Image (cartoon, rainbow, N blue to C red; front, side, top):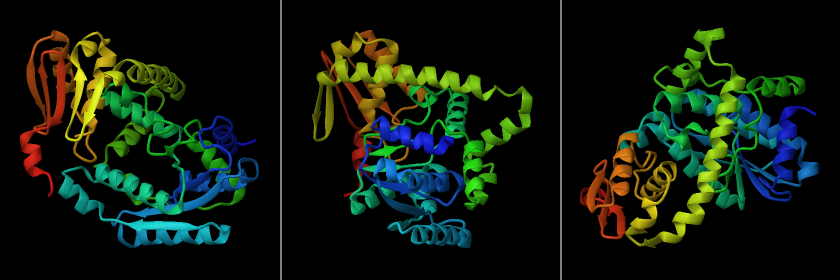
Length: 334
């Protein structure tokens, strides 16, 4: 059995996408997502998944993006699958949210996918992230001195129903799958745009050639980090969540319990506390802000700290409060 089908059947066996579920397939028209589409259809007799195709047009690349949409809709029609699509303006969102075009597109893409999943009645949103994406995420996070959450790569599942069943499948295996079936795919011209961080990582890896880190070693590092992240998630749920009090405009935490956390768990806790108030598409804390906060909390004294002029952390006695800063409240839309 090929690796694409094997990964999808494993997703059903492990309950990542339970048998009989309604699944929204995120299909851009590229090689990875076409393998997800055809692999899901081939295994549907064993998984009993109810499949719907979804496509997001980001409003850039002009006619090329229009052809991507037509390509996906045509394949869905020929396969007899319902197809939803959304058109958005990623460039405008990047300007309004003060994000990079890549980050703005990602933010809009997931928002649109969640909207289409609700419309389709799908409980899972399957994306086609694969093994090469895992390696690129790790290298990018390492370059940026990211924490364990970033270094461990894309999560296999998210709280919003997004799942990534093909993280163990390589790009080569995906291309072999498509070639064996004569399935075509679209090529994204923006993959050559070196203004995008991931493209620069890919170019650097190609230029290094034999001098680059072997994929097997990189994947081993990521697997160990993912195991550690999973353990931290469990620790956070067991030790920190019971000490939180979520209010309409703020979150209160028992500071003494945070003080007793390990450095790694405290870092994770601070990021989770800030996520609720972060600007769309942006990380809640920079690495420097996170480390400064960790030191303040571990120090045991009262303090006030503002992250990015948007999120205020304030400790008074045994309570740490987290809420939007006054300036963020003034900038919030009415």
